[in-house]
Image (cartoon, rainbow, N blue to C red):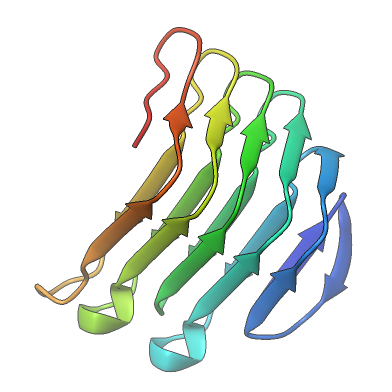
Length: 149
């Protein structure tokens, strides 16, 4: 099961999310959560437009899977407040089902303290729970305790 929320309201249930226009929000722009296991718990998020967030803890893209792969593909992500990460992708799947892939083709920019450009984590067991981050643009952060990738 995947719950996808935009601008604080439910927008549907599916295994993937695709957005191709600019999104500006005070709060996480894309929030995808899967509680499924194995291949049923996979989450895929693709955005080709700009994502811009304002306000504390307003992540650009937040994707979390309790049991499957996480795949995030974005263009440009900008956040403007503290604790607001550009991309946060995390999986607790086992083996290859716990793999995390984050790809950004544009600029990832955060503008305040404690804000990371890209966080990609796999807590799955086995060597196949690989983490991959590909950025063909620029990652920039500002503020204390802020990191690029």
